[in-house]
Length: 352
Image (cartoon, rainbow, N blue to C red; front, side):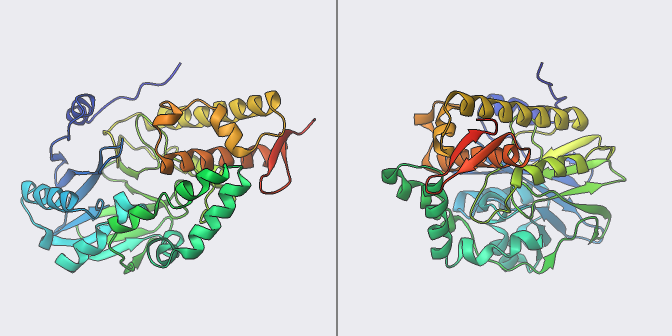
């Protein structure tokens, strides 16, 4: 039976159910949740957290997309919290994706605050948001090897390029280190490196407040996309599952995710996510047993997704294929399947 998380962000959950933006909230003394809209995306918004600092100013966790609507929402949210964009002293980015990193540079320009990011994500900035020709070429190769039909290759390979306009390129000033505390007046936060959704994804844990700011690593209702990607390490799902185990026994009483709504029962949610991926591994193995020699794309089309395949946008179709590949890598490493050939590679059960 699926685990039903205990929702602590009840106002956020009610807004989610009504398909509207939740309000700005002071979720703990001196800690504010600011929803920043994401254009044309089922996630609807990213929850930016504003931490009031001793002596004045605020630190942000994540920033939102670089759009005028997002910029306005962030400014209005800070004003609702009693401050302004000029009060920002730091932007602590959980990971490199545009809905988290996109506005960081613009915030720094307006406030002078520092930007922090994990080195494993920082190293990808130029190839992803600057000169991305090599990245596109690498994605073409990856998708061809996955068996994506030739006529679909351009749509999928170029699918994320529109997102470059949602980011203001900004080299970070601070690099987060796993297990290290972050110097924020009035706050004691520890960095937990949680690769998988991106190579440098981090969470932040407050021991004294028993709070986990989880970014995209742990969400209350859905699981983050864990994909083989031209810029990902070879076994992102393995990294992700190991990262989930790092959150066990934290003693967190509440999880503040970047999407949806706040919740408790972290341990049960971790177990549910791990079980979900185990079920997905079994499902993929069953597809390969039924259709030996399937490509990653073939397998992807056979799997269950949250909506009909034809309603999934090209970028998300690419992500789905990458997620299939990530599970195939784990099955290979556990010697449950084998891979043969290239462009496309085909998968077989190990005993075939």
